[in-house]
Amino acid sequence: MTAVLRPLTAADVDRVLELEVILFGPGAWTRGMYEEEFRAAGRRYVAVEEAGVLVGYAGALIAEESHIMTIGVAPEARRRGYASMMLAELMQAARRHGATSMILEVRADDDGPQQLYRRFGFEQIGIRPGYYQLEGVDGVVMRADLEGAALPGRTPPPPPRP
Ligand SMILES: CC(C)(COP(=O)(O)OP(=O)(O)OC[C@H]1O[C@@H](n2cnc3c(N)ncnc32)[C@H](O)[C@@H]1OP(=O)(O)O)[C@@H](O)C(=O)NCCC(=O)NCCS
Picture 1 (cartoon, rainbow, N blue to C red):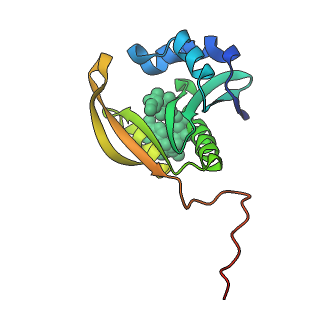
Picture 2 (cartoon, rainbow, N blue to C red):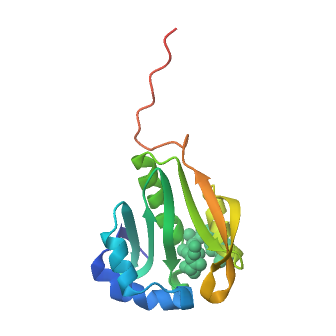
Picture 3 (cartoon, helix red, strand yellow):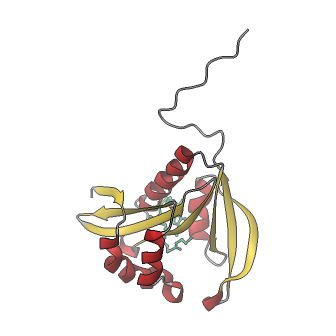
């Protein structure tokens, strides 16, 4: 099936809220939280559509130290590379901005998402005890170094003078 990667907009919030409960249970974000995110500075949100239906979404704060705010894919659309597409896009946006690193928090009790992040160069840098307060689950803090990674289309610097 052909998937389309596009910006996530305020018009998608109803569908996103439907998925939030399925994906994040008691930690689901509310409409107000999404509206705030869309108003906030430096955010980039993307979505993946399959046959015109939104099946995944992700967002980041793009800054010198960028931060993945959320990422989720509908259960029926997993392991098709959609989270990878969105993560690659957000990391690329951060690099274009000149970010030096990207960080995120992920549940300590589920290794699946951590495996995804490790594939993109994220490494564990700490634990936030009880970060997911409503469920009493620790958060693993992961960080990826964005410096030195190749930027497609960037002209290489001239060679040093002899
Ligand atoms: C985590 C999540 C976003 C992954 O979405 P996805 O579209 O299925 O991920 P991808 O297809 O891009 O996965 C790429 C690779 O990551 C790894 N991976 C992803 N999900 C995995 C899982 N559940 N278990 C083990 N490895 C996993 C695999 O290496 C996978 O490659 P493969 O399918 O060739 O083996 C999705 O499972 C999800 O929405 N989970 C619930 C919400 C959540 O936990 N979000 C993250 C919070 S920080």
